[in-house]
Length: 114
Length: 110
Image (tube, rainbow over all chains, first blue to last red; front, top):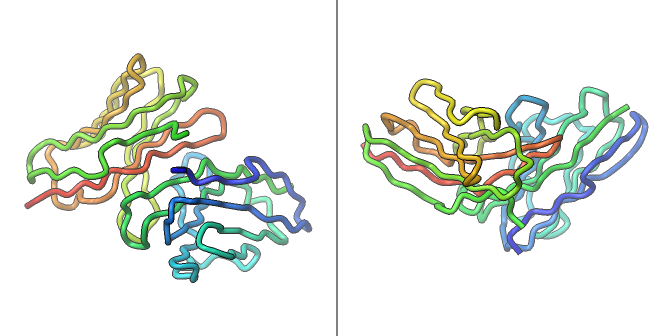
């Protein structure tokens, strides 16, 4: 398996809802990443997990809460989002943090906040 | 299945020479293609793009070529500079979905 799988592919949620995005890889990668991509812009790094520990939090608002239950799974819990949080959320993984060999992106979750 | 493939994980080029990074895709629905550059511990930054109605787009030292019949994309950097050393990702999109290649690590040797 050489893929990063993200579910769901599309999500519409209200501002009072709680939802979660899921990312899974079975390549033995030890670093996993969440990115946010707005239209016509490059992906912005949100969080980095290295060996299941949070290594980087790029000043992301607390309404986004990452979780890494095991080395294959990365979740992003969403609560009380704003319409401006609507974007494509991309997950990626690599063999190790800072070593970009084997860097693999998922195809993203398209999130719409209404 | 990987819809966008970069078959060379790494490339080394002498300073001043041309760097050619390649990318292949499988989905003929893709209508927009991009190249990103990434330094360690940072997110990818946009470099150059091309829509499917063109076969070439040039921006300074960077040129992207698109061969739709071969489903092949390439990035040419001329002349290569040490600061160009990074990982380069190609990406393809149609509709709301983006698909990324796995990257090619370019090292430009002074």
